[in-house]
Length: 141
Image 1 (cartoon, rainbow, N blue to C red):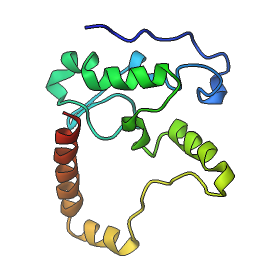
Image 2 (image 1 turned 45 degrees about the vertical axis):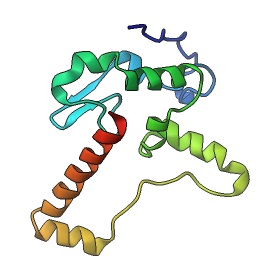
Image 3 (image 1 turned 30 degrees about the vertical axis):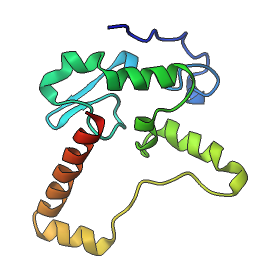
Image 4 (image 1 turned 135 degrees about the vertical axis):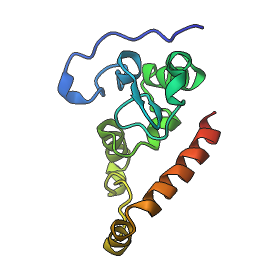
């Protein structure tokens, strides 16, 4: 399988990747292997493969698409749904600068929903996460 080559390093480490390419180096340098699955970066969501398929996932089509977009100075569709990422936040802030809008914040649940979740031993959140991960596995498989 052809691996997308990693571009030259960024000169200023504080610029979050906007002065050079790639926008993010994580997909070339590391992998996050968790019990729930594999993520291409610490801010990534959803999982790209089950934990046991780490060898195939390292050069799989999803990670290659992410690397290809980042090496061209663009954010992939996977990155754009990872709203907790500071690079995505900066990108959205720059994109919305002329519109007077702020960057998109990750969605917050109401205090009532959080209290009910705690009272029920976080079972509703676990069910929600399991259903979301199942849907995302189908979407990115």
